[in-house]
Image (cartoon, rainbow, N blue to C red; front, top):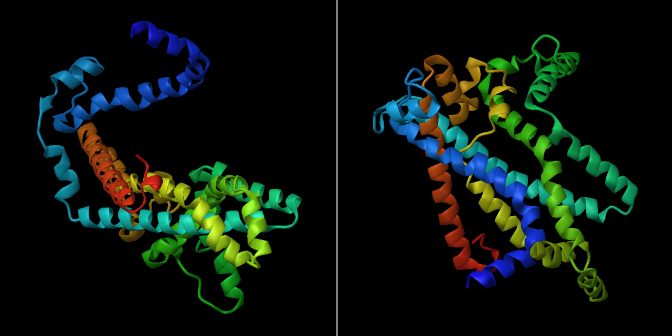
Length: 310
């Protein structure tokens, strides 16, 4: 048995070497830190020795660190904002990314298609700090481009950073602008891999573009769409910190619609310095995400086993 295993390892050594860097990365940055979740149930103290010693010597406090999230008036608001924003990102991001990929494939000019792909992909590489200043140049109450344009038509300037009702639309729009190009590349690659004979047969049968998209492209993409959606559902309790902190410029007047779990915990950490509270929030988000992925995957397996993640 051992000889057979060694022989199999030797036969696949090149493939194993290829995945070794990724394996090391996951072990160091994903699996080893899981031991630190014990801090969520302790009152972590810096002065209890070294890092490991301080974890061991810190006092057990049970579920006390979780009270910060669940026993405040803001608990419902931050949970609601986090879930609803991510739900909008998942649904609209999927629809727009697939639509953009299909449009790029259907462009007759390949040079123009490559130009559009590059232009759409570039925002993904911009940091949220840069995007925040970019948005500020549009929405500034004094010198913002939008207020200058509206003033030409005799309209009163809007103080965008003091009125929370606009920000659900602004944040969703900015998210789509930044990530749709990146997400559409995956769908674009999947479309390019579809057997072209299927489209040729459909054209012979008299099917137009819309019918080809409906009966060939979308069914062929369904497995990829399901898997990416399942992965996104697992992070529905995680918010993009840069989007909700940098873009609204941490304006207290906007907290009703921009405050999410991640920004709330960050502000609490700045105020109290409680590492245990932050760890408790991360554990809470991870646990809920795990439950959602398993539950959603179970439902998908019942509907179509081939589209399930596992």
